[in-house]
Amino acid sequence: MRIAVIAFGSRGDVEPYLALAKGLKNAGHVVRLVAHENFGTFIKAHGVEFWPVEGNAQDVAQSAAMRELLEKGRFLAILKQMGAEAQNNALAFGRDGLQACDGMELIVAGIGGMFIGVALAEKLNIQFMQAHYVPFTPTRAYPSALFPKLPSFVKGPLNHVSYRLTQQMLWQGFRSADNIMRQQVLGVPKASFRGPYGSERFKQNPILYGYSAAVLPKPTDWNERMHVTGYWFLDPVAEWTPPADLLEFLEAGASPVFIGFGSMTTRHPTEMTQTILQALARTQQRAILLSGWGGLHPANLPETIYALDSIPFAWLFPRVAAVVHHGGSGTTSAGLRAGVPSIIVPFFGDQPFWGQRVADLGVGPQPILRKQLTADRLAQAIQSAVTDQAMRQRAAELGAQIRAEDGIACAVEIINQLA
Image (cartoon, rainbow, N blue to C red; front, side, top):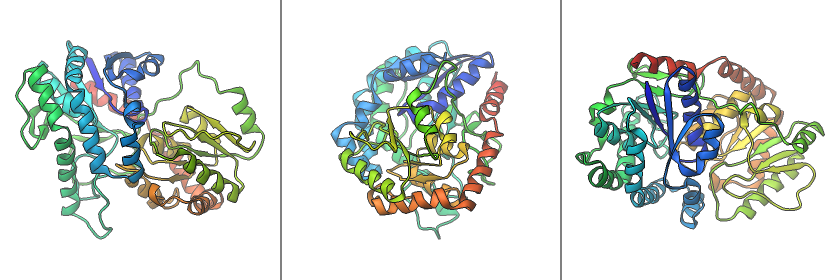
């Protein structure tokens, strides 16, 4: 089949879809990955055809307005800001997306690309498939990962309702952009006020969930269309080699703690960095500090801390004692796969959901909300993660389960059935 995979967002959003695209290509499909233009070098390095869409997710995340919203964790306000950015780029999204998907037989997309994916599938009269790395189909088993946290006693029907509300929050945030694209570029009817969820394109095919059933089992009220495949991991390209000074640092002492918050930005990176340094000093732990989009990159670091800008987590995480991060699905999966405890500091979105899931599985301490992060709380969490042997054993066992799965092969087999 000729398949277009749409992946919008941060690097953590793009990586699982790039991994899936590589698996599809290796299985003999003709695959094109559609993503923001700033990911071209990264995608091409993995040998997948890249089709750029105008825009840069990093620039949006690092804007003053978005830094403030991310720091406060105001999900609805973040959605509104993202919707405004999408509206500004709606014409380019439609134009570039139409060119990218022309001649394709199937469009695969998750939450970040499903609205444009459905519209393009309707315009081109081709198939559309949902592929998510966070639960999106309504269930009574647990609340929506993207909905504000519900009290622990809330169960059943209200959990189910939280998914419908999440779907509408997302749709209403991006509805104006979708209408502009549909009317001014694609020439297809506007989606209804309730969104494209009733579209035949949206409902016709299996739905893939790229996470492990050992982490989040398939709910009993999901039907045979829903498939929990296992994670879609992207391993480093064969030519990649670690920096020599990083190898020297790893060999110079006990396994360090990894700390990094990926694409999450903050208005006060120096203050955040000082909180981290104080926590490390109190626990006397060596650490690897990832600057990320938040700019955690202090000067005059002690020799017990190594700073870097980027690193393949698949290579690094098995070599550290614990991972401290924001709880994005991709970083969470990499930490769990490595078999080491995770300390999650959620900012917004699905991050609190994964943070609580890690704690419930007993493979990490309770999450620390970004707004509640202090040196004392972080130090206590680090100390627990590196000394609690029962926690470390559970993390190692879960990691072995995840490494035994092949989520990409499972997903590819399901897509093969469409061909």
